[in-house]
Length: 176
Image (cartoon, rainbow, N blue to C red; front, side, top):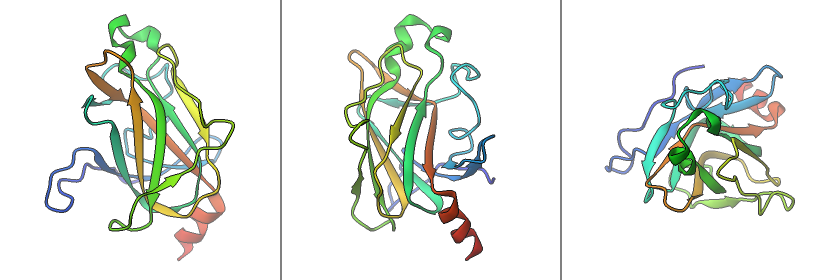
């Protein structure tokens, strides 16, 4: 895959929270999209403490421009293994996620619904990851991930994101 990069400008304003994504395929041939670092095959135990993007607590969202349209089916967030970091830093992981999508950059954001069984799922301070099943949605090329932060966190550290989709759909776009 090509390397993802931070956008320098969106609508004339710098946006550090907006990232281009490219395609990634895991060892099970499941296709994902993500930034070159945010989609690496790392797991919570292979990550290092500084393999992350760090944001202030006011920035509780991140936007991704995918390399092509997808119909999202699942979402996974992977944090560093909490046993590998200082106890005071364990609350810097996000805890609850909301996803929004849109097809074009100027479209209005619409919710990407989390399945009923995962709707209230929260990542605990000691958890290393969270997986959410998504209900069928419209195709998107832009994804906004909003997250709640833990109490007393001065910053939030984001490690790895995975957004799964139907591989047949990705194949169709590659052929066009």
